[in-house]
Amino acid sequence: MTAWGTELDPAAVLQEYPRPQLVRDSYLNLNGYWEYAVTPASREQAPEEWDGQILVPFSPEAPLSGVSRQLRPEEALWYRRGVSLPEGFAGERVLLHFGAVDSSCTVTVNGVPVGGHEGGYLPFALDITGALDGSAEEQEIIVRVRDVSDTGYHSRGKQKLDRGGIWYTAQSGIWQTVWLESVPGTSIGRLALVPQLDAVTVTVLVDDARAAGGDGGDGAPGADGAAPADDAAPGHVPGAGTSPGSLDGGSYGPGRTADLTAEITVSSAGQTVAHAAVGPGVPLRIPIPDPHLWTPEDPFLYDVEVRLLAGGREIDRVQSYTGLRTFGMGPDAAGRQRLLLNGRPYFHAGLLDQGYWPDGLYTAPSDGALASDIDRARGLGFTMLRKHIKIEPLRWYYHCDRLGILVWQDLVNGGTTYRHSVVTAPVVGGTHRRDDAYLAFGRDDEAGRAEFLAELQGTVELLQNTVSLAVWVPFNEGWGQFDANAVAGKLRTLDPTRSIDHASGWHDQGGGDLKSVHVYFHPFRLRKSWLRGGRAVVLSEYGGYSLRIPGHTFNTKEFGYRSFRTRKALQRAYRRLHARQIEPAVARGLAATVYTQLTDVEDEVNGLLTYDRAVLKIDAGALRETNARLIRAAGG
Image (cartoon, rainbow, N blue to C red; front, side, top):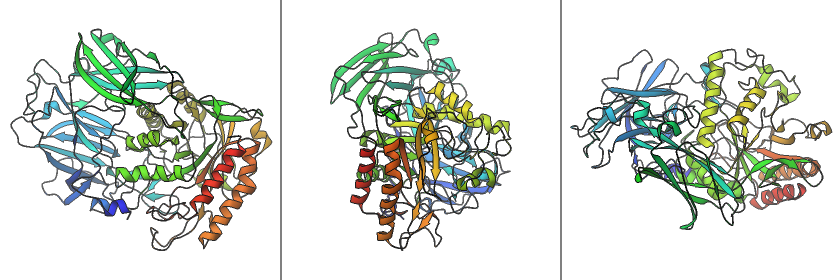
C-alpha cells in the first residue's frame, strides 16, 4: 500500500477536473461507492441482487476497490449508482464521461440504453439527455463490462491473467474518473493546438447535436433535468471522446457552422498577449509576441480561452493551455544525429515508467501520487519518461507539462498469443523478422489490426495537445507488431510534429526516426553502422538492475536482469555501467537513454523506487550526477 492509498478518503476519490486542456464550468464527479455484481457473461439484463460496493474508479482486482476479485473472460461485471442532479445543472444536453473502461461496456440510464464503448484505454462520452427522468429524485446509471484480457486480440498492455515476471495483474472495468457535464446544444467539442516557436495554430472543433442527429431541439431541459420534448435517442458524442474523424468531419466543421465564430485569447499571468477570431474547423495561426519557450528546465505555459459565439452571442466557453516548443531531428556540431528541442540538440535522459500501483493497479490512488512520480524523476536529473504500454489519465500529461519533463508515449499492444521466438529470443541475439508475417506476431486477425489502427488515431487525437510529448512509440519488442513502416507513416500523417520510434527494441523495419535498441544481457556497444543510417540512435531500454527491499515488495519473487543484495553494490554497479558503457556512447552519438525502470512492479524489483514509492534504492545525488554527466557528454 502506498502512503496515498493509506490516506485515501472514499468520500473524495480523485475529485480533480479530469480534462485540463478543455475545461468547462460544468462538472459533477461520480467517483465513489457504486454497487457491483459479477454474473455469467451470458446474462444481458441487470441483476436483481448485487454483490456489494466497489470504490470507483478502482478496478475490482485492485485492493483500493474493496473487492479484490479477478474478472474472468466468461464473466460480466455490473455497476449501478443513483445520481441526483444539482438544481440548474442540466442544460440543453447532459454528457456522461468515462475516462477509461477496460475493455468493453454498455450503459443504460433509467433503463434506457445510451451507448457503449470498445477498448480499455481511451475516454468516451455519452449523451444521456433523452434518458433523464425529470420527475425522479435520482437518475439510475448501470454499466455492464466485459474484459477478455489476454485471451483475445484487443489492446491489453502488460496485463495477463496468468501474471508473472514482466507480465502484471490483469485488471478490468472502470479505472478512470466518471463524471457528468452539461453543455449547450452546439458546443466546443475539441481543440487542436499546434505550437511553434513564435505562434500557436488553433483549430476549434464544434459538436453540433442537431447536425449529428442527436438531442438539442428548441425545447431545452428545465432545472429539474427533464429532457426536451423533441429529444432524439442518446448516444456517443462526436468530438467529446476520441472517435476517429478528420478535423472537419462528423458533426463539426466549417460546412455546418457558418453562423458561428470562435474567439481565442492567449494570455500569461492574466495579461492578454494575443487575440483572434476564426470559424469552427479552420486552422488559425496566432503569432505570440516576445515568445517564452517551453523546456523541461523552464516549463512555461500560456493560458488559452475559447469563446464560441452564435450571431455575436456567447453560447459556450472553455479554458485550455499550451506551451511554445518544437521537436525534431538534426545534427549536432559534430554531425551526429540528435533529437532536437526548439531547434537545438537536447539529450533525453529517460526512465521506463509502467504506471502501476500496488493499491490501485492502473489507477493512482490520488492526483498527488500521479504528480509525485513525475516530480521524483525530475528531481533525480532525468529529463524524460517513457510511458510504457499504457495511456494515462489526462492529468498525468498535464503534470508533465507544468512540472517539465519530456514524454515518450507507447501505444498499447494487442494481438493474440505471442511466440517466444518473436518476442523473447531477440533479447539474446535471436533473429529479427519482417513484420508482415502476421501469424508469427499474433496479428493474423484483420479485425484486430483494424482496431489497433483506430485506437492509434484516437490516441493521437487525445494527446496531440500535450506540450511535453516528444516521441511516439507504436510497437515494443514485437508485441502485436505489424506493418511498422506503414503504421509510422500513418502516425506521421496524423502528427508530423513529433519523432517516431517505430519498433522499440527489435524487429527493426528500417523506418521511423530512431534506431532503437534494448540491451540487458550483454555490454552495450554503439555500432558505427547505426550512426550511418540517417536515424538517431537511442538505447530505449537497458539496465533493469534489481534489489529487494524487505517490507516494500509485492511478493517473495524477484525478477530483474542483474541481481544485487545491498544498496551499496547496486549503486556501484549503476555508476560503473554508465561510466564505462553509456557515457562514452553518448559522446559518440547516442541520442537518448531509457533506464529500466522508475519503480518496482509486482515481481519486478528493478525500479529505482520500491513499488510503494517509499524507498529510493540509489542515492539521489549519485543519480543526479550520472544524468548530468550524460547530458554533458551529449554536448549539453
